[in-house]
Structure formats: C-alpha cells, structure tokens
Amino acid sequence: MNLFSPSEITMNYAKSGKAKTECSADRLLVLAVMAGMFISFGGVVSNTASYSITNVSAARVVSGLLFPFGLGMVLLLGAELFTGNCMISISVLNKDTTLRKTLRNWFLVYAGNFAGASLVAAGCAFFGQLNYSGGSLAVYTIKVAAGKCALSFPQGFIMGFFCNVLVCAGVLCGLSAKDTIGRIAGAYIPVAFFVVCGFEHSVANMYYIPAGLFAMQIPEYAKLVAEAGINTTALTWGNFFINNLLPVTIGNIFGGVALGFAMWRFQKN
Image 1 (spheres, rainbow, N blue to C red):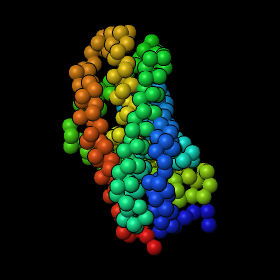
Image 2: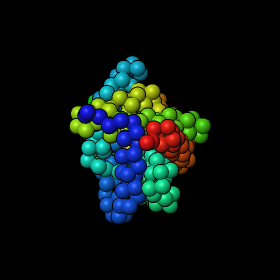
Image 3: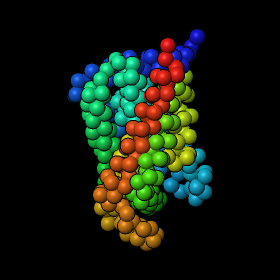
C-alpha cells in the first residue's frame, strides 16, 4: 500500500518527535527560521492574491487555496514548525522523550519561526512588495493586522485551538502518504479549512501582524490608511504580543497536544 495506517502514522510521529527533541540547537534554529519563512510566504501570497477581492467569502477561499503550500514546503523539506511540534506530546506520552526536551524544542523552534517570519515581514514592508495598486496591498495588510490585534483573549485562544487541531491533522495526513503528491494533498485540505474559517495560527501571525506594523512606519502607507478611514488604534506591538500572540500560542499548544493525546490514546498499536 502507498499509505500508512493511523496507528503507523502515530508511531512514526512518536519516533520523529524523539528525533526532533534530540536535534542540536543550531540545527533546530536554522530549520525553524526556514519554516517561519515558508509559512510567511504562504501569508504573503494569500494577501497578495486576495487584497483586491471585495467579497469576503471569495477572498477567504482564494487564501485557502494558496496558503497551505507553505506547510507543504515545511513537510517536504524537514523544516521545524512550532505548531506541528506541539504533537511531540505523542512522543512524551509514548515515553520516547521527556517534557524537558520537548519544552527546549518548542522554545528554540518558536524563536526561529519568529525570526524567519519577521524577516519576511520586514522585507515585504520595507522593500516594496506591498506597493501593489498604489499601496492598496499595504492598506489591506495593515487592516488585517489591526483586526488580529483587536481580538479578545478568549477569541484568540479558541481560534488558536481550532487552528492547530487542523494544522496538526494536516501534518499527520501529510505523513500518511509515501509519495510527494500524497503528502502535499494530505496536508493541504485541513490547512485550507483553517484559513477559510479564519482561525488563528501563531506562526502565520508572526508575519501578518509585524508586516502591518512595519508598513505603518512608512509615511505613504500610513497616509493611505488614514484616508481609507481604517481604525489602527489596536495595532501596537503590545497588543500583538498580549492580545494575539499569547492567547493564540496557548490555544495552538492545547489544540496540538489534544490531538496528539487522542491519536496516542486511541490509534497507537
């Protein structure tokens, strides 16, 4: 067969999680920077393709069709993504690794993801990628970022929880196949679901919100936003970390750990 069974997927991930926790710090950081950039490129292309679409549903569908290829690159190239690594809970439960090693992995990968995503956000904001349609893409980017910074803590947590259930399901579905097309297809649909639904992904937000914050530092973009009447009072670094990144990250952790527990408890050999 060209597919692994659910129990095989679970045990394969248990071994993979063990290897992830035993990686050297420099390797983890480099692979995490790569993953942060890949996910950010998904954010860049989805914003660029949908910024001029006035119908919200159509814009979400277009974003959902394009964004998932970021996770596809992560899976195929072995990059380290924090949200997917929340399922190292499988390895801990299976006693293949320890909680201490898992927390080390999460910390290093999260930092690397943030660095990679911030690099892409700064590059797009300061070097002209947001200039489409006379800066309309920049206005859209800022609007998206401001909306994300205005979430309440419960909203961020629940939207983050749902998001990572789907992202981790995508990782596992991607690992179910033994060929490239199957792996991409397996990861594609669950991630498309979370994008269309508007759930919150901490690493993606490491691009979306800093891109908006950086864009606001450019006078031409700030003027366009003011002329468009967009409320940007919530768009601050403090609100980024407290109103969005903190609750979304916690929600992502709970979502990934919950799915990992369910797979280990009910699908292991």
